[in-house]
Image 1 (tube, rainbow, N blue to C red):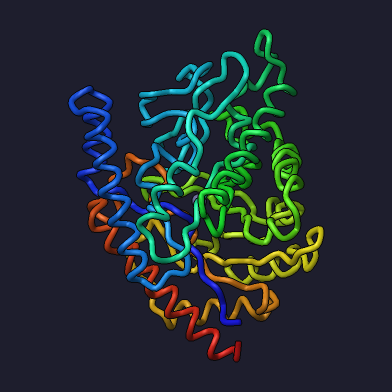
Image 2 (tube, rainbow, N blue to C red):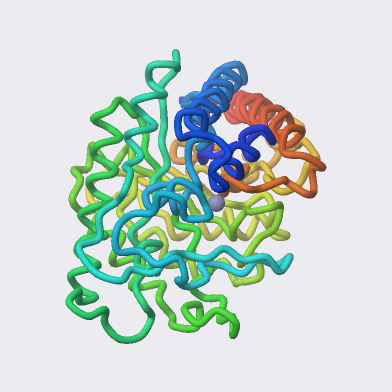
Length: 380
Ligand SMILES: [Zn+2]
């Protein structure tokens, strides 16, 4: 089987769409106009992804406030937020360029998503002529909605975590029921868990094992066959062309991450200085048998925060090197992250989000060409 490819999920939102988000927050446009702007961008994403030759297509998450909040609110400013949420929660991340992203705070139970990702899948399968994939958020990210210390009156931490697991399972099952061929779970908080950033208390609490255990409570509710098509994505962040945890030694995460019983992993690597050591670690720690299925390892061969377009030859070289350490039948190719996980992102290193959207399409096209070259060289 040739080396498979898959994108993480998001694409830069056109500037026109980003303006629609701002206008909706300010009450300048109606909900209907806002949704129409999302639909137009989403359809363009699907058509353009199909033209690249990508196996599975997404709407670029162009209907989502972000990868981590699509289930909580309509916009990043909190318009249309779910019940029992205050907008003054923890910082999910403080990025290297100094900007941050803040999560809401849960004020009571029960915790229920305002929106499930299946809502996007239902729309996308009507547009797409190729199989559709959808990314969903991990319960380990939702865990950060709960205050770090103490308990919310009338809503214990355990009850909240049980709700996080139930809601994530429901989110995944509904995506498949709506016609998704693949669902990947975003786990960007994994590497950040070992950052020990004095400005961001949760990163000092050594939460990685808790995250892994919580995520496995979801994965373990699915059969081996179902888990073949349920993936997990790791990265050091990718927002406004900046990162949040690239300096955290990768082995702290990679030595544990494959304990999660996912069928495949979308693994940032292109932006690492020592990529060969990452291939080595992925080969060492990924499992042939994760409760009945092998773990496919899709290595990131595309930098999402840099407008330089990787050539097919460069990508081939990376994949052929990776195959020295990762069995080729478990090797795939992906991008380091979504190209724009948050809805407001002008892609500063690119000059504009519209240009970044064109660049993303070129990068994806070359990733597919590079994977084909590598497959030929490796004889698969
Ligand atoms: Zn990512």
